[in-house]
Length: 119
Image (cartoon, rainbow, N blue to C red; front, top):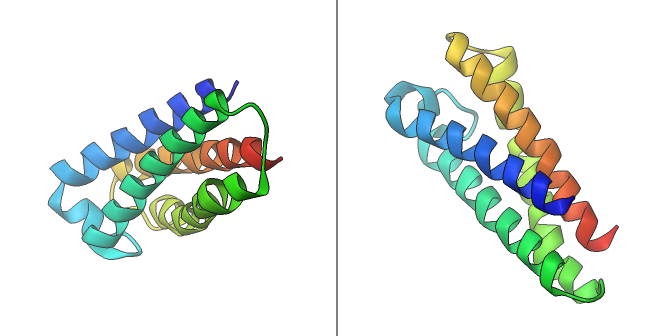
């Protein structure tokens, strides 16, 4: 189940990342600016992949895994929520609404992946 959530997160965040990289004004309109918003997405993608791989390879859950992988992913989730809200509630065009929906789905997926490590 975690693989499906992780794959959904990667697809959603990759689509938004490609949109922001192709549209110069789109990422600048985001809450953290172009560089900050792209950094949050890249960190989310990397941490989601690391959490999913660790969940598949580790036999048990430990507090160390939580503090080194799941907790940083929870922090990225908390940084992604304003990005999704900004896209949904302050869109400049229809593509921003689509990016906001993808960010909301990706945020929920990152939360599920992080929760599976410790939950």
